[in-house]
Image: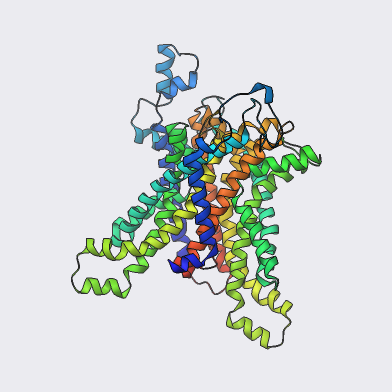
Amino acid sequence: MIGYVVRRVALLVLTLLLASLVIYGAMQFVPGDPILAMFFPRLPSEQVYNNMREQLGLDKPFLVRYTGYLGGILSRGDLGASFKQGRPVKTIIAENIGHTAQLAVGGLLVALILGIPIGFYAAVTRHRILDNALMVIALVGVSAPSFWLGILLILVFSLGLGWFPTSGIGGFATLVLPSFTLGLYGAGYLARFARSSVLEVKHADYVTTARSKGLSERQVNLKHVFRNALIPVVTMAGLLVGYMMGGAVIVETVFGRSGLGHVLVNAITQKDFPLVQGVLLVTVSIFCTVNLLVDLSYAYIDPRVKY
Amino acid sequence: MRRALREPRIVVGVLFLICLCVIAIFAPWIVPYDPLEVDTDNYLQPPSAAHLFGTDNLGRDVFSRVLFGTRYSLVLGLLAISISGTFGTILGLVSGFLGGKTDMLIMRVVDVGLAFPSVLLALLVISVIGPGLPSIILAIGISSTPPFTRIVRGSVLAIKEMTFVEAARAVGVSRPRILFRHILPEVFAPALTMATLGLAGAIFSASSLSFLGFGAQPPTPEWGVLVSSARHQLRAAWWISTFSGLAIMISVLMINVLGDGLRDILDPKLRGKI
């Protein structure tokens, strides 16, 4: 087990290093001069331009700049300064990451609370029509674009019923609609997955044994079927965290919420590359770490798993 | 083929896709109004017999704009998926067949690709090459290549060990011939399933990126743009965003249905799974 963990962590570090190289390298291919972009729409004097070039290390070769950037991150957590705001990227990320985390947790809760029961119920119900209807709903969940879903929810629950604010941040009420918008895709995805997971387990030998012992259908389902069917579903839920982080970009735009997604979209529009770089790097690191934790948690959920 | 025709999801999905193609090709002849024609006397009209989906703030017919939008979404989706399908299949074939260092190298690159949530990888590409329709095609194509590569490689690894490949090798068939004549046709089934589900995903992503302002630009009647441009007039005109978004959802849903059906027929091992 320890050997496996060490191997996986080493692979994670390698992947993150390569990802940082890709992100940093990609920014070098952006057409146009970064210093001119910084001053846009004004033009810097030649003196200022040269000073800036030296200060940013743009006169040095790529690898020197990259190792400098990486060294800054590893030693001081320094991600550079935003071109447009002049503030450290680290500070901007720290100010916004909490809002995105709240949204992602909200979305994940919606996905888990709606998705798993729907999938499990669809798998064990004897009404085929109900099973089909639930699966059609799940399919709608995975096919409806979140920006549209968000707008529909605003139309009905904010403009129509006046239950929730249309946008903004602060308090539970502002989190409800964005969480549902983000979470309904995950709910549909989990419902489909949970259903097939139950169907697979339902015919296992130990389930037949449990039934022949005289347990009620309810006991068989709760103690034997659902528990075992839950294992792959947990992995899938972990993978959804990545979706939540990508989806946050869109949901934050629809609801005008501040957060990392919103920062990223603005940074791309304003060509604020240090900020783009920083947000992507932080997001990718969180995404990969969560995936690793989900994989490792397997051993605890399923004692049969040996590494 | 006969089995495919007995699977209702495939039949319905294919018929829908044909409809979508017909609408896309013949849009200029089908639409009741010019999608770009401004009619300031009839702005923000709710749905009626004259304007099925109502009109927008410039009096343009939303129904015509949505029908025209099919062109953009379908072409964007198909082009993006041909990029990821081509590169994913080639990389997966090479990686799985050659194994060793080549495999390791390709898989590390794929790992890096998979380290990004796909929207973010697409946004990284866009931040380098700038917004626009060609950019989002490339961005979605690149961001959906890693999962494609992985699936194809997995299939190649399984097929490589099968007895018919071993037999071919035993009678002295050359390696390229084994790859192209024996393994490639077997990879077709999972690749087709991936491509179909990928097409749904590509249409979904393209409209999302356009919604964010990185793809098609107004007044282009692209679905994501239509939803986005009307979102500040929700109080005055619910119909513009609602119907445009509905078009995206129905298209993505029907193509997903087709993909589900294909997967169950072509790859029985995956039956019932996502």
